[in-house]
Image (cartoon, rainbow, N blue to C red):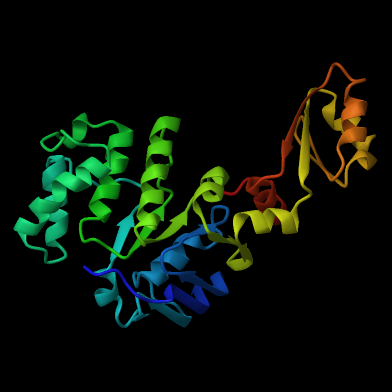
Length: 308
């Protein structure tokens, strides 16, 4: 399959979707340039999954325009999905088949001949770090292996666009880094990735651009470093301990902004010298001084309260 030669792999304009009286997606707009990694971030219930289902033609929006791979969605969703790979949030591999059989059966859904699928399987398994596992039963694979096989399966039709819903949830650091490496290789080949994740370091590493959703609204959009520079002071000092909250509130002028969560105080600063000097006289407190991150942006824009 030839790689798409489009300026935008995905274009969304005025997308709205409600269930009963609750508007889940409230008129969002974004575009994903071809050959880039785009992140769609947000707390639970923010509208990410509904937005992606609308983009894939699996859910019919109430209004708005969606173009995927140059095709109008949902009218031409079937044609568009021939050029799309999907890595779902939860692995749904068939436990009755081997690794190769899972790829073979999935490839047939796209009308690919068995001969072509067989020719692709060795390279896909090697790409997923599963060389030598052609005949392995699914029950014998570790969680990381299953996740990598699900990624390989999403590539069986040589898609132009790959949707990845929290691709590294539940994986150990080694498996996460391997998948990150493979995803970077895909964008280097000109593939387009559309990613949802709750790991802000993952989004910061992988995404060229990202959008933050909250309560169905698009709160902000841009490159990770641009968003950090635009929304957060450059330095953060986290202060820990039983007396951290009271100590920090009595010295909130030492930073541009103070947030307290439990026994941790977060000072957001442009100049940390006065705060660090004060901490040197408080040996009972522990602290960590770091650069601002995408997670700080996410928390500032969507809040610290727990979402279920």
